[in-house]
Image 1 (cartoon, rainbow, N blue to C red):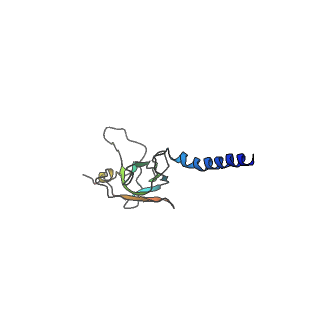
Image 2 (cartoon, helix red, strand yellow):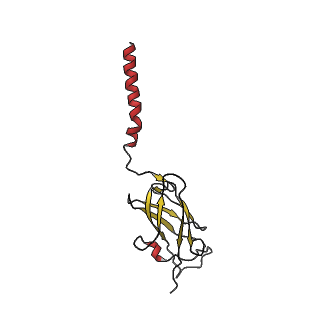
Image 3 (cartoon, rainbow, N blue to C red):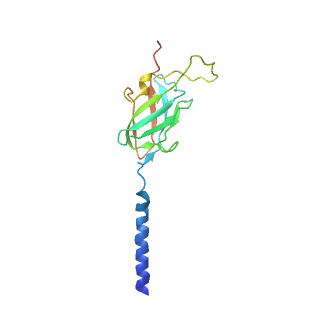
Length: 147
């Protein structure tokens, strides 16, 4: 009877030891780490509207966040604010500002960002996300040139 109990106990311990491994096998998602920050113009004024997007150079996955009126943002990859993958990312700041033919808004949307920051092929912005420590990012951009 004693050996049967030990055999069952041994099998149970082996099974319990493999449960964490089996649970992790189903996810193809890379780990994400919280990322927050601020988008500002070179004169220090906050960008008041738009979207920040990072593209992981390793995983080819995007993390996005909405720019608040004070220039701050939080990024999310799989959920709204789960952060971004570890590693180097290309960064863009996108805005859609339509001013012609619309009634005057009560909210100040601030200066428009130079369109070069809106595409990965022209944006000079890069961000490194780390697994440890805080990932607080400041993205500095230039305003759009007046024609």
